[in-house]
Amino acid sequence: MNDWMAALLALLPPLAVPVWVGLRARTGDRLAAVQMGSVLAALMLVLTSFVFDQPSYLDLALTLTFLSLPGTLLLAHFLERWL
Image (cartoon, rainbow, N blue to C red; front, side, top):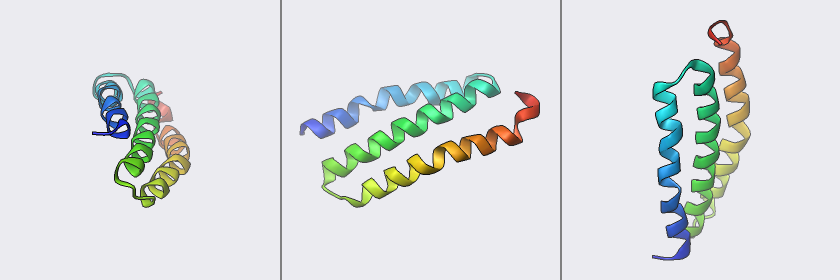
């Protein structure tokens, strides 16, 4: 096990926080949890790229980063009556 794998495994428990908030909190807090979860998922994809020496995972992380904010804003637009 190398250092990159240890860093990847260290990000698994913090990923449980947005999942728990997404299941238990109000709608506004769920939107913040989606953003936090997407940031952690992008970091995990970058670390996965280093662990397995596959540069294609960096493309996935970049795509997730570019699409997470507009997706969350679009979701907030549709949910604005309940916010």
